[in-house]
Image (cartoon, rainbow, N blue to C red):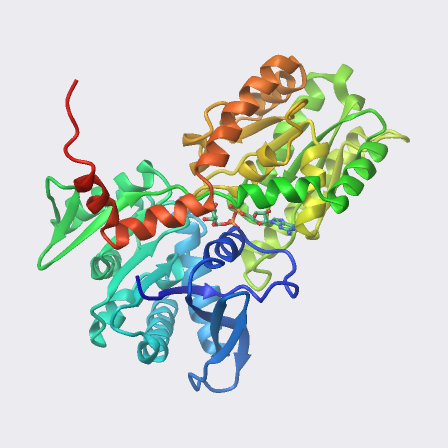
Length: 470
Ligand code: GDG
């Protein structure tokens, strides 16, 4: 293969300058370590007038190329269409989705600007891999500019059910642009199935026997390919001096109590309000266990320019304050609510010190926190993962205690189950979970996607001969 060109909304700052990072950034640092190529995206900076000037940087074998965007682009494309239209809609929150033509126009304009800027950098043998919902039409824009390269697209968030997506103005036009790619990937079969359903029933696409989806002249191979974490790196992080120090600090401050931990970007899709309600239900129903536990919720703010995010922040401050006011004692508070991010090593130590990892998004493409929690555990005395059924990760992690995050009672029951779980069962469940986290890590993910993109999976099957029945 020639070079890999990865294109995403944001490009992670070179190592050493980064603070708290999203799942995508963490995944790519690991994925690009081995590849030659370019990682292209928005710098996160604003400029008075868009010039398309590219800022190249090289770090640890990865070249990053970034551009600045104008204020109007940021408002309409990023804060607008990406985060006020697509994000809520794709997370089944049509009540929060805003449909404004200006947002859609800005989204299209920025995708065209990305295409104009990156097109001259793409060489004939390069393979292009576009990431996520910010960049859906980019492939089609590159094709318009004569790009004949193999091109793939991966969606990191859920794909919504057909009837929900139909509420998006010009949904068909948007989805049609996905047929410019050779391969499109989703985390789970569920999201893949919903994509197929839309293509077939709303657009008249047809399914071929080999699984490709055909629309007019174009065909696309659609696959489920669940992302993982850099498991080895995370296991090492959990054994590092910084993690050990944090572990001891947490154990000391827990004062013999069991810690329940949640770590999420402050986002309504993560179900924090429902989580606090579920925890309160546990406190109400089990007064005898009250002072035996506490919940540490780490929630670094995100997308603070969008009003719904300011609102959820206020709601959570109110809710945690109310619960603490109602149940705290002079020597115990039920919730430690922390609005800041921590370095990964510190996070790893916190996970390890927690008896329960409480990961209860209302809807999540995958959820990497669930996997990090498992990877950080002590194999001899692991904690218990409570995981939402509606996280993509639940399909791989069936040995977690699975819950419906909308049900405070189920959440309360799950906490009781986890607190009372015998050590043998904890170890057995953890081993099964860790097997998946180790086997299907981020290296596996990127290899699987790029193999399909290059047609190497088919070549490998052909080489090993036909599969014998029986
Ligand atoms: C999207 C999809 C999908 C969080 N707080 C701190 C911190 N984090 C890190 C976690 C984890 C990452 O952020 C969050 O990843 P998630 O997967 O939970 O969620 P999203 O950011 O919503 O990511 C998601 C993902 O893309 C990948 O495809 O799984 O479904 O929504 O790695 O550790 N990291 C540090 N300090 C913090 O305080 N260092």
